[in-house]
Length: 448
Image (cartoon, rainbow, N blue to C red; front, top):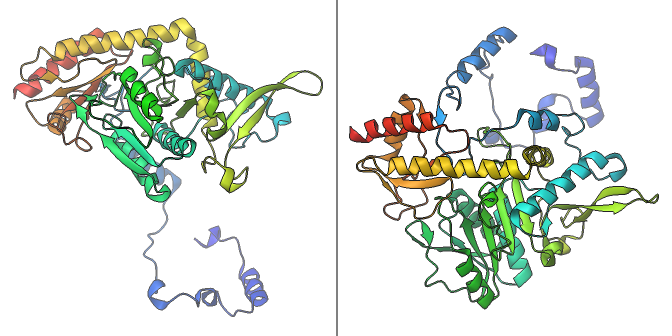
C-alpha cells in the first residue's frame, strides 16, 4: 500500500514539525483509548486488476436482470417500459452530463432551455400551471408537497391515504418528526380511499393517489369537494403514463400534483437515479420548492432562459425559504423531456393505451384462474390479486419459470385481503404471448 501514500517520510516529518508534534499518533491524542484501534489491520495481500474484475463479475452474474432472464410483471413504483435509445443517447451528450448547477445563465443556455421544456411538458401532463425543475424522486416530491401545504395554510395536520406507496407514507412520517407536523392515515375500503367519514377541518392537505399504489383509480372529485369545504389543499400523487388516457390531476381540482418520473424513459436501475415531478397551481408559485426556470429576453432582445425562482434556504434567508432541498435531477429530467418529445403527443397516447390494453387482458386472464381474485374495481396498468397461497412463495416459484411475477404486499397493509396480496402490472413491452405464458405459469403455481 505504500506506493499509494502520496507523502514521503520527509514531508510527513515537516508537517508534524509545523504542527508541533513528534509522530502521527500525536494527532489522535484527544481521542479516548476505547475509541481507537490498536494493533494491525487484517488487510489481505493485494490482488491484480484482472482478479478484481473476475470477482466483481462473479457477483454480477448472481443478478437476474429483467428482459434477459426474467419477464417483468412487477411495478409498485418502478416499471419496465421501453427506454428510447435515441433519447438516452441525446441525454448522454457531454453538455448535459455534468453536475454543475446552471447558476450562470450566460454559459448554460442549453441546459436551462432543456429544463424549461421539461417543465412545460410536465405541466401539460399534470394540468397545472407551474412545474419545478425536478426533485429527487416521487417520495421526496410528496414530502415537499406536504411541507408546502402546511406553510401555505398555516396548519400542521396532513391526511394521507393508505392507498399511497408505503415508502412515501414512511418518508412523510420521518420528515414530520423534525417539522412537528401531524400525519394521519386515511383508511381504505377495498383498494380505494374511504372518504365517507373523513374530516379535513384544521387539515393542511389531503394526499391521495391517482391511480394509487394498488392501481385503483381514486375519486378525486369527492376528495376535491372535501378540500374546498375545509380549506385544505388537494395533493395528488399521479401516474404520468395514465394521464395520457385519464383526466389530468389539474382538471380534477388538484392544487399540487407529484409523481415518480421513472416511467418517462428512465430504465429500471435498482432504485435510481429516478425523478420527482412536482407541479402546482400558479397561486402557489412562490412556495414551490427547488428551482423554476423561466423564459425572458437578454439586453439584445434575444430569447434566453434563467432560474427565475430559487426558494431554497441556500439561496435566500432561511426564514423565508420554502424548502431546504438543495438540488434536483437535472440530467434525468432532461432525459425525460427528450423521451416525451421523441414520442410526441400521439406516441405518448399510444403508449398509455397499450399499457391499459395489456393490463386489462392480463387481469381478465388472472380472474379465470381458480382461487385467484382481482381486488380492484377500476384500474389502469396495475392491480392487486388475492392468492390461495403465499405471495412471496408465488414470486419465488414464478421466478423459477422465468417471470418476475409482481410485488408481494408484505408491509404497510394490514387490511385483509390486501395483506399477502400480489401487485401485478403490464406495460407496453408485454406481448400477448408473454402474458399467456405468465397466466399458464401462475395457474400451475397456485394449483400446487
